[in-house]
Length: 367
Ligand code: PEP
Ligand code: MN
Image (cartoon, rainbow, N blue to C red; front, side, top):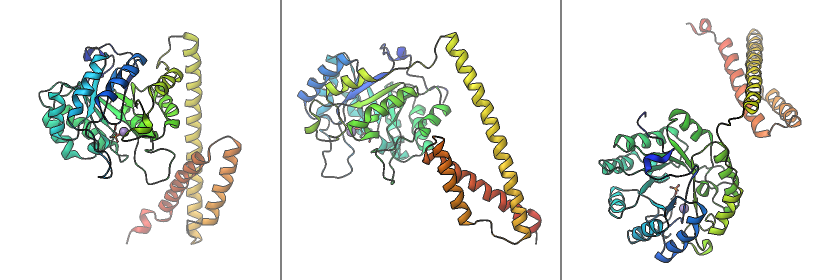
C-alpha cells in the first residue's frame, strides 16, 4: 500500500484545505435550487467539498432512487460557484463515466458497493487512466479485510488520492446508532495503512441529528482527517434521510462546538507529563499480564485437581457467581458493566482452555 498518497497535507490536491477536511451536502441531490441555496449557505462555514447523491442505493424500491444524471451539473455548478469541490457516489462503471464527463472532482464508493468485489473491480477498471481522487466507505458488514480489499483494487487502478470513510456497520443487535461505529475497525485500518486519510461520516453512523455532535467529536479526538456531514436546506422535506440531515444553521452550530485537537503538542512540560503517565500505564500493563499468568497457573492447578477427581471443568453456578461478584466489584470501581463482562468472558474462556489442555494432555490422547 506504500503508494497510497496521504491526502493531507492536501497540496497534492492543488487546493489548500485546512484540517479537518469538511464535506457536506444533501443525502440526495433533489433540485438545482436546493443545491444552490445550500451551497451558498454552507461554503462560508468552511465546507471544502459539496456532496450529493445522484444515484441513491435505497433498501426499498419504492423509495427515492436519486434524481439521476441531470443532477450532476447542479452539484458541480453549485460547488464551483461557491469555491468548493463536488463529490458524488458511484456504484457502477456507467456512474463513473457520467460523473467524469460532468466534471465532478471527487468520487466516493458507498458502503453497499464496497461489500461487492466484482463491482469495486469494475469501478476500478473504469478509473484506469484517470487521476480523480476516490473516497471509499467501509462495507456495511464489520469486515476490515473487505474494506482494505476495495482500497487495494482502486489503488491498483493507479488512483493515488484515496481516503477511507468510516460510516459505521450494520448490526442485528439493537443500538442507538443507525450503524454502530465499531471504532476499533477504522483504528486498525489506520494501523495497517498509516498513510491513508481517514474521514468520518457521523450522519450515517447516527441516523439522527442529536447524536452527530458526539460521534463527530470522537472522530476528531481520534485524529481523523475530516468529516462528511449531511446537510439540507429543509431536512423535514428531504426525499431521503430526513432524520439525520442538518440545516446550514445546525451545521454552523455543530462546527462551532467541535473541538479540534492536535496530535502532537509542542510543550515540554505537557510532553514530560504524558511520558510519565504512559510509563505508569506500561508498568500497570506488565502487572496485569503477570497477574493473568498467575491466575492461569491456578486454573491449570484446578484442572489437575479436577482431573484427579474426575470432575467436569464447567460449573455454571461458579461462573455465575464470578460474574455477579466481579460486576459488583467493578462497578464500585467505576468500571462499566460492558467492560467487566467482556473481560471476564475472555478470562473465563482462557481458563477453560487452560484447564482443558491439562485434562487432555497429549499423553491422555495417545491411543
Ligand atoms: C450516502 O452517503 O448518502 C450513502 C448512501 O451512504 P452509505 O454508502 O454510507 O450508506
Ligand atoms: Mn444519506
